[in-house]
Image (cartoon, rainbow, N blue to C red; front, top):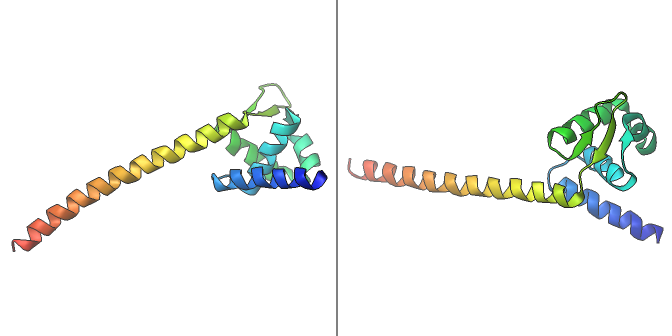
Length: 121
């Protein structure tokens, strides 16, 4: 049973990494999602990583809307639901693909124009 929990955690971490999170960010998110709101020092202790890793990671996760924090001191951090996080990642990928398609269309138009101008000379 413990092995299957480890595998499911690894699958989640790998999925988050595939969507662009760094491994430490994914670990922090997964811990908060599983254990609920925690202070930064709780993350340091539980995950056995340094403060210098935890706080910049939390800041990145907050900026991306994946983790929230309280305004009280010390701040308490909580994870946004995994469904919302995956939806955000998918939305971002869809927007990237739309930009790629638009860039392709623009590049093709420029290429055709270039070819026409250079075939006439």
